[in-house]
Length: 343
Image 1: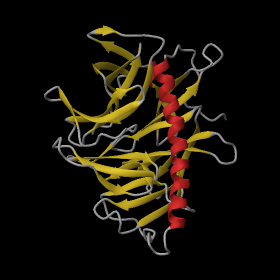
Image 2: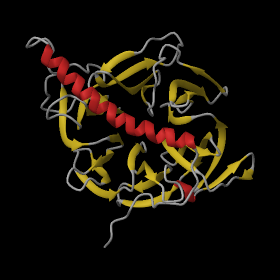
Image 3: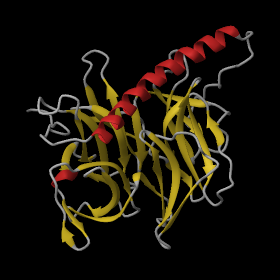
């Protein structure tokens, strides 16, 4: 039996904005490598014991805890580790999995990774013991992934290279997977789209950045068309979405379901962290986080979001309070990326 493949290539036109986004994904991988080298060099230059490693735990931390991919030099590099949300420096529990992108909820996890032997990408569905239950091939570079609160569904987004019609082009593909069966449920491009009460369709549709509501059926995502990024919402059971507004990338729904944290474009390939209040219809920048944020954030709780930033010392996970525009970001987990929260 042939394995299901996520994201079959489609002949769609692509604009230069998405080309720059693809470049950004490649740069992310490169920056992680640069950060790794810089961290190793820095540590070698320090006296012994000046920067002791975070101790290992023999058991997982109590909830709430973070699941992150480790950027720690050495054998932990890329491994999924568990860190206490309340005391992240108290120790890490190292799992057997390695992931480039990951998310976990409801006792199920999604791991997007590259196989070291075949150099091919795959989506691995794992359980709460971090045992892989299903593996599905991917057709492009991992970009985003999310698991629904009940663990029933996983959304995986990849970047796909185009065919000869667009030598420098690519497209995104977002697939919904049934985590229990390990089968593809739908491709979001197969869903019917509505805008301003009318059917909306274009051959250049690209979806990414899925975030699920508490019912695990309702979801939000980004839809790009004609160079404009739209926030859309829909229900998996309906296979239909509607456009909410423009200007939102990589949405992340708050635990109380009232706000969406997202990355707001401020330059050709530069983004900052913004917050959209769905009840009032207003949005604002979290102005004290002015660094370039190319990530889909997660919510630590109703009042804080967490996100990765990549710099000269590698990747780190930060947190910031969302209730005030004057709140300052706080370093939460050093040498880590792709965080999610287990409550």
